[in-house]
Amino acid sequence: MTEPVRKEVWDEGFTFHCTRCGRIWSMVYEVRRYTGLSGQEWQTYCREGRPVRVPYLDCMCAACGGLRVKVLPKRVSRIEEVWVPGPPESPPGHSEAV
Image (cartoon, rainbow, N blue to C red):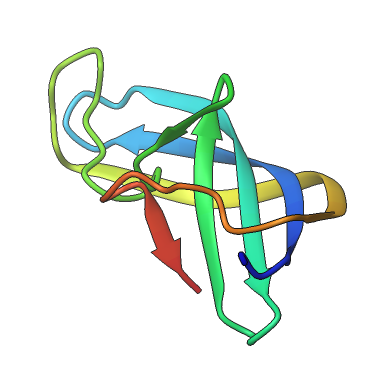
């Protein structure tokens, strides 16, 4: 039997700055944090309902292809907490232990 988990969901906005071309852009991600009954925590980042890589790793500027991208302070909104029947399936490289 799969152990039930608590799931918290919120939106987190990130602002990116390319130090090569100066472009600044923002993106909002849905963050899902799961906590098992044993206390283990993990989280995933999603865009349009699909898991994506952690937004602050391996950033690349869409305008110039530059890899020198800084992530500026984030903003958080819409926090929601629910219980789900078990841990979600998480594709390799798409989750981060907390």
